[in-house]
Image 1 (spheres, one colour):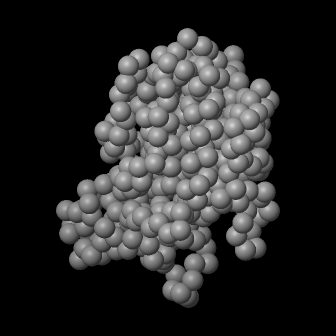
Image 2 (cartoon, one colour; image 1 turned 90 degrees about the vertical axis):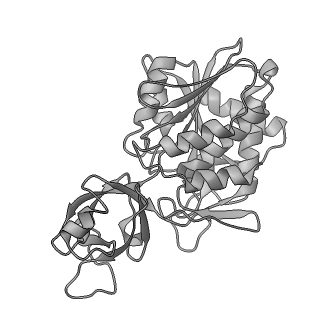
Length: 332
């Protein structure tokens, strides 16, 4: 695995609808081979088609990350923000934001009684200080509608990575690794790997791309909650114990055919796996599954701690096993 590619993906600016920098890294990282076509569709999804003689298989990883958008600037130059995706607001205070034009700001919280803890987790209570002296000064740096993300950081220790935007840049990284390593002559499918846009605000890229491709089978690659932290909601998933093959989430029940086939592939090739059963959240698989008359769809997830925070944490052994599983699944 080329960890430098993952670092580039993490540092690329890419909240929903602003995925161009991520797209550029992906294009530069894929080694084009015979029978491969790379193009963008009308909605902005990046599609890699590797022609094969079997049924159509669409695999999706989303490029976008959660973020914020400037909604107002007060007379003193403080920015008010709105959410782009599911911001976990209790993590906002004290964070550094990076805006799309390179301006940085510090997040704080409006509370007359106590400025030391967040009592009401309402986005309207938070503000961003970019060092401006007044409204006019701030407007020279950041405009209304400007988007921002958690300032990118990347830390690796003992095979584990801590970074914002692993949801779902790790899925994009897996896609690149699979595409660079598969043998196109051995494909069991006519493969469409789609790096989707705007997943965080309603799985929109997966809706449009699956409608256009009309796959026979679909698989989403995304992160999922890990249950191996102290005092957390019980989830039978842990970092380092293998690929998480989805059974159910809040938006979908995986196709039995795809789920069982993934399990069979993992067991046949001695690839560690876990079963993902969660009650919150969903992913691109939801959109693929209900395309047109319906698509046999499943998902493979990477167990992740602290999703939608600046400190998302994964185990790279799980990533290796997801890559192996997908590679074995798509090849004969």
